[in-house]
Length: 280
Image 1 (cartoon, rainbow, N blue to C red):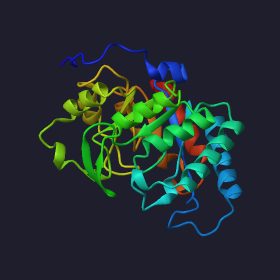
Image 2 (tube, helix red, strand yellow):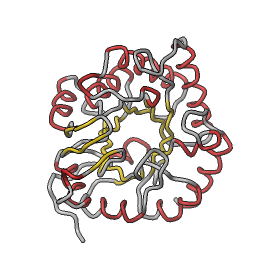
Image 3 (spheres, helix red, strand yellow):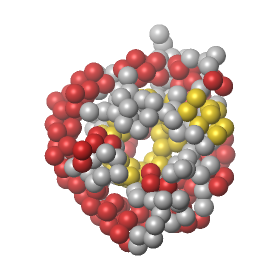
């Protein structure tokens, strides 16, 4: 099946950002930030210091990119309710990481905080933002979420941040897709390209849950954009997934004992990157 041509061709964003085949993006899950329900008064400098330690471990282990996420802020606020304190602390955390390592950085502002994420990216010169619902809509844990593309791309243009790439999920995890049940994953991938994403993401059902190779293939069938894995990659899955995907975002598996709130484990980073290098 050949994907329909819905937009003029653009450069391969993964090649521009990373300069390697099948890049691996390691994730830093920040502890709860001020304003979040689980924040208990930890000095913010300690949150940033933990992020820097994880960043150095990831960089020394050879990952190609690092993505910072306010993962500890659950239950996540809806996009319109993301506060100034979240944006400012996420900015400070990203700047601390950027200053500590030479590895390209990006970020996720959850839940679906495309515009706050772009503001942070512009401030810290991050290279990309991940947006979970870019086109169409779905029922998330936070309720009904619309695709962010229209407003986000106008905002990106207004702040002069067109060099910040959009990594957009297709058939995003943590939600129900009854609204788009009459549209295949392949059609939804085409929608995301039509709404001018730069890279598409295929995921499992939850953080750390394996992405299935057929999910990657269904996304790829609908797009001419690069397609990467967004959850659940382990060394054992590298041969099957990296044969069909153009790269991967890896978070939970790289943590001590495979628990997302633990520090990054250097031995796990080495093990995963060894498997990836063999597959490239």
